[in-house]
Length: 42
Length: 262
Image (cartoon, rainbow over all chains, first blue to last red; front, top):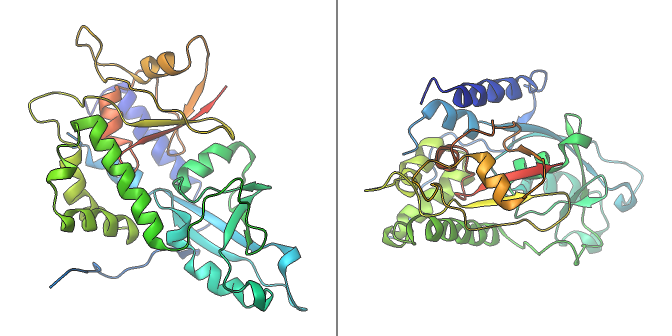
């Protein structure tokens, strides 16, 4: 399915969407975790 | 099977730059606080990403209101915390310029428009109930009920901490179609303006066993209407198969969230 036109179009539109973020790279990230947060019951 | 990792990654990495500003009527004192700029994940929920916003603004409001529940509005419309951020953006995107400017409130909670969210646990509870509902539709609840509590936690923590691999290590089980080529029904919600979202029981295959497409879904939900569909900030082609969409374009709650415009 990788070469189906609908899949190619979706991929291209997602890449185009993310170009709108150019210029905002210095914004603080809302979620910044350096590693997995582990919780659990002993 | 959701195996198109390139698409899954792009969906997961969707971000929006947001400018939060305190409602000017709630500023107590001489100094108006600076706006707070934040890059937020499209797939998350506002209560999971706004701890910093609360801390930033709370010192500028009246002391009586400092323990009040924070809520948000865009252009006078209260933002529903239980909708994923990307859905809220896509709903109003025609009126938005980036960064998306959102007003922060601590006063006059709009009881008629919003449900309360006192903690992250409320979001977790809502998120897990959506996952369970989606699994009822896809697999008659057989996958989620066979999972362990640690799997549920891993889904939640993967979303909460923005960890793609952690989330998908479990979510792939929810996207499997053992023995079949498709889910029983496609979990989806359609949003149109301020109306409550619409859900219908729609199968991914026709009676003849052909794959249904996005166009088939739209014709079933909105017969005799010509509409545009946006999700994740894009308009998927109308011939995209529903089963593939469900596997690759669902939000972490396992629903497709489709914003409808005439």
